[in-house]
Amino acid sequence: ISVYATIDDGAMVGGLDAKLYEREKKRFGALRKSQRMLRTADSGTIVPQGVWRGVMEFGGVEKEVELEVFSSGGGWNILVGKPILEKF
Image (cartoon, rainbow, N blue to C red; front, side, top):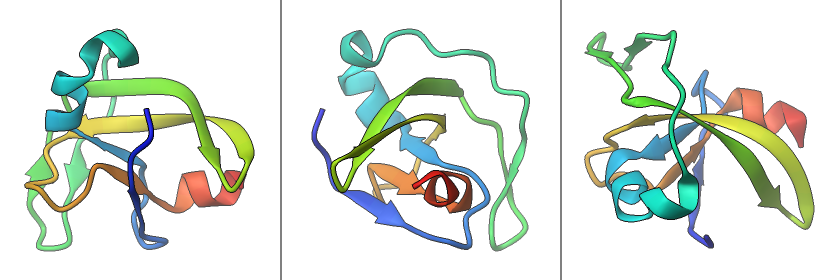
């Protein structure tokens, strides 16, 4: 799948928007259970639907990544946080 990603070096996880996951579930495959509870900048909490693990290509380089699946509220499709940036 080719989608635009939002890069946020302050985000401590990578994210996959829940709507994108639901739309492309057959291509993404099954999720693993998430062991995290996420905290938002405004001190709210989010329980992810699960974790997707797969290969992401960025700038012609491929790396295995994990993305927590949760609703972005329409803000992004893929959130590239600090753990993913450090891999590239």
